[in-house]
Length: 401
Image (cartoon, rainbow, N blue to C red):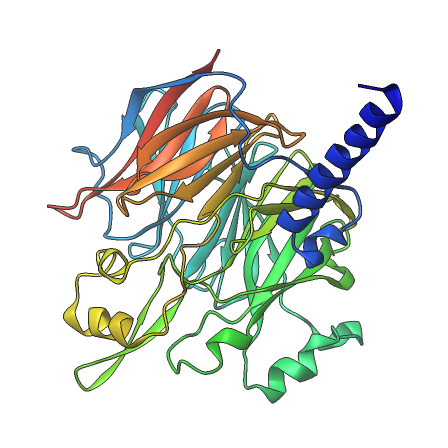
């Protein structure tokens, strides 16, 4: 065979490969700057082993309420549980021994109505109150109150974000609903409306991100970032009223995490993750063209026990597939831990990606293990006993070989 013919065949082969790869990537993803795409048949580079290590649960000294809303781990391995129903913070040492509980309900300094979100970093505990729209800051070791930070939008600033009039027009009550703490102490504040009592315009809601400067206690930039909300929320008529069911996995949603000064965000319809710096500037994106798992109605029903909600699922227009992924956690090494769907609705496949996006390891875990934090060689999950309804936090030691 002549060298000229070999060259022609090589060019044809490369063009075909490039064409196939291009066809796998949707246009809205191809257009992203600094995009790194990986093949759908990527194999993990290493193995991972996880072993149960410590359990944080009810003891003779403390009884959890029925809704643990958040789990945080500080730099010393101390574990904080946000007990939403009891309006308390439960604190455990890293070895699982109970240290103390702190009641935070009230309207005074360091007190909150509806403690909504919690972050532990820089030897401080930051607690967001939904009603008062403030963040109360405590010393992580002593739990002594340090200061209250007002994070609602104040008229005294003389400015307001561009989305404010749109939100008011749609009768949304946008307020801080989650936040992340920068290494310098400043905040990313996410505004949204999680009042689903009316079921009004659930699909139109957004996350609006602003930058808050703690040193001057005011916003230095509104309209930083905007993401779709949905909240995986489904409204269903049950009996004589409406029931709003969160955590409906087949509904697409935005997922976030923040670590080491980087924000990662993904819309679950694509296995695509975008990274932003502390100022909200887009940096890069990673993408895998994984094939989605087909959605079967009976398996979607398995996530809901109430007959009224199951009937709503049957009457819903179900997508043809499960989302590309379910949740994402960024660990202290910049790796992404991503849960994806399998044909078994009670089992998730977890992928661990290097900070570059390369597939590092994978493993299967029951869906009831909700991963909260990964740091210091440990993975922390929030789990609920299906028989008793009792919650606990588990720490797993992991090794990646």
